[in-house]
Amino acid sequence: MTEIEVLDKIAINLRGEIAVSNPFELIWQAVTNGTGGAKPFFFWDMLQLFLDPDTMKILYQARDKGIPFFVNPYYLSLLHVRVPYFAIGADLAIRHYVVYSQQLVDEFGHIVAWEKEDQVEPGKPNAAGWILPSQKNVHRRYPDVAILIPDTMGRACGGLCASCQRMYDFQSGHLNFDLDKLQPRETWQEKLERLMLYFENDSQLRDILITRGDAFMSSDASLEKILDAVYRMALRKKEANRSRPEGEKYAEIVRVRLGTRNPAYLPHRITSELVQILGDFRDKARKIGIRQFFIQTHFQSPMEITPEARDAVTRMLTAGWTVTHQHVFTAAGSRRGHAAKLRQVLGEVGVLPYYTFSVKGYMERDG
Image (tube, rainbow, N blue to C red; front, side, top):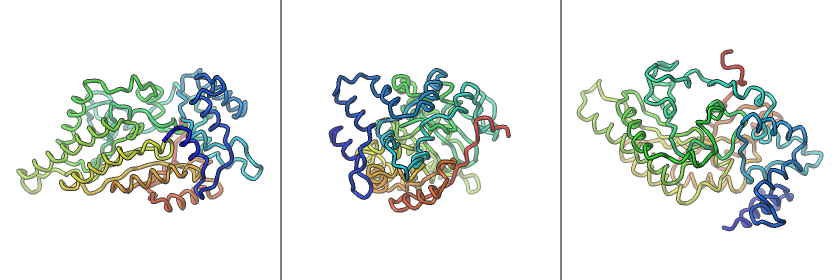
């Protein structure tokens, strides 16, 4: 599919109607295809024409403060920029998600981990009592669940959410959008095996969540290697249990989850090749006792359920994975029935509500 065809598809709403022309789409077309002598900074310049001066002032302050501003043209095309009177404010749920607040700009540089379990010192247990094999690659709070954060492009996202609870990691630079820095080092494969050994030797672990920033930002090859490592670890764990007496057997892996917001931010990422990797992993993992396969995604507004997002969800479902939704409960996203409408639309495309996440303010962690 050509870029022009993609842009044409973006202009179609869920009812198959041609949507109102969006200047962001026209700008991206100009930048991509070079019409009008467009330069790389042309897109940023044009933002100033379609975002109000107060918004641009905050974005400039954020840039000067060192806050990454990362959002792709597809997602920007969802914003209202030529708004009829009856639709004023209809896009606040997504606008507030990618346009930073003054509070964030003021607090950036002083943000600490929202959850105390995220504060890890080498060789010392975290707040939940776990001694972790890596400060940056494993997060753990509950006995049967562990989060795996790969040293891959998966440390980036399809866009940076203003309310991200990992903002402190963007502040430190561990999570970032410098794709060169995010390339896996040669030592990553060795580290991955060491992390799998930690999981293999844990007697309580049953559930692994691969996320943070976004599992689907990893390349197909990287994600396939990670899933294969999880499979081999789970198989070794199962085989070792055969020689353990009753009452001393370890918990075995029964659930694998992938955390991603790309179905909303960049649904074009869910390609047939990615779906094949997901399906192949599920097929072989089921044979060794892994029974649950979840893709935990995150939509914030019914406006994000575009034809592209709907098709992405359909592809994930055909791979045999259950797609669930975690809703970040922001003021803009919960007003005037938006949350209820979002759940209704998600149900129509096959996404199951999982939980609502109530966000703490940047200065509320110790409250």
